[in-house]
Length: 245
Length: 233
Ligand SMILES: Nc1ncnc2c1ncn2[C@@H]1O[C@H](COP(=O)(O)OP(=O)(O)O)[C@@H](O)[C@H]1O
Ligand SMILES: [Mg+2]
Image (cartoon, rainbow over all chains, first blue to last red; front, side, top):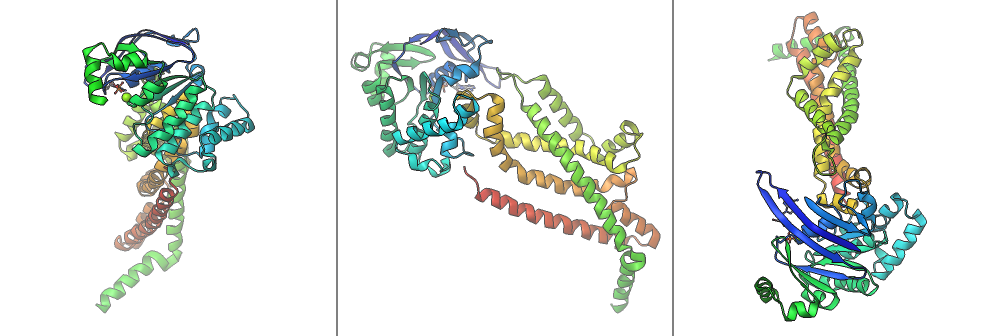
């Protein structure tokens, strides 16, 4: 479904210094896989994820999505993004819109659905996450866990082929982590292809089809969850796991 | 003491009541407000355009030529005195026009456009970057994200400062006597000449300016509190 070839990303700091954040990533994700990405802070996990939907422009390398090279400057980024949902650490619900409008804005404005179809879809998705009663509320009145479930629903309303999650539970109070992971698990069970950056090792074990360890802009290690956690190979991963488990 | 009071009363009579001179101040205030309002409207439209130009960037994040033009305009306007801009407009650029109101409104409109552009730009930049990223990640274009998400949130940020800019204009247009407009300041000057007394006409003009501006400032404060209360963030 998505193939990443020799992906590099270098940021130029304001003082002109170069910061090589991604140093040649190669990876292939197949339909239905749930890729969990872990690694120390600053290792480039977010940048990797944000390159996949071109929120960051790769410095070099290729990303092939459904047979299209989306890094080609001629590729229609907006079309590509319609097929890739993204869930952010800080939810990023649209503050000026009700929950209903948050969910229906993109499908309606992009002429994927009529207003009625979008409303119907939104209500059934809200039902699935038990937040139907919040349809007319504004984001400010929701808890973090509710916001993140809405953010997931907002992405799903576009019927994406792939969902990207960037630490979706890291900004939540502990008691709200479970409700969000629950929704993500359900999504995984329904066959969604997912790339999830997270510190929730339980989720990685339980839901991941593959777990990646990123360090210093590279994928240092990649394995099935069982192998990954039970027989880590590189000393860096062993060290990392000893700290987080 | 009584003598002093009588002298003041006489001056007031001479400067305000005598020959219905109060009507002149009123007309002058009318011209001041007219030019301020037209300037504010021109400035608002111009300012929004220039702010969007200034913020425009290519998909790879580099700034555009439009952005540089907008930056230069803001720089030049903010780096030169409004009087000089007004005189350039009157004597050079629009020297065929006898319509002082038009010339003054355009000149001050262009002037306040630069300041409003900076207000609007700051208001847009104050909206959390995550809002843009969420919009773009759903496939909305840059323009759609601006229109449906960013600008509605930015309006709340910029409405009070833009109203303040209008208040500022009321004071700054006190120089439009240069283009033969009998605004409040010039009227006070004329009555000074006619009555051989500078004190009272200038005090009267100052009081009128102050009262108008105080009222508007209070209203803006009210608006600001209302906006804050209805804040959905
Ligand atoms: N927009 C940006 N501009 C400049 N540097 C950035 C930007 N985004 C991330 N970085 C830098 O890239 C590095 C990796 O960041 P990130 O991908 O967020 O790591 P992680 O998500 O693994 O914590 C950090 O050093 C960070 O400072
Ligand atoms: Mg991160």
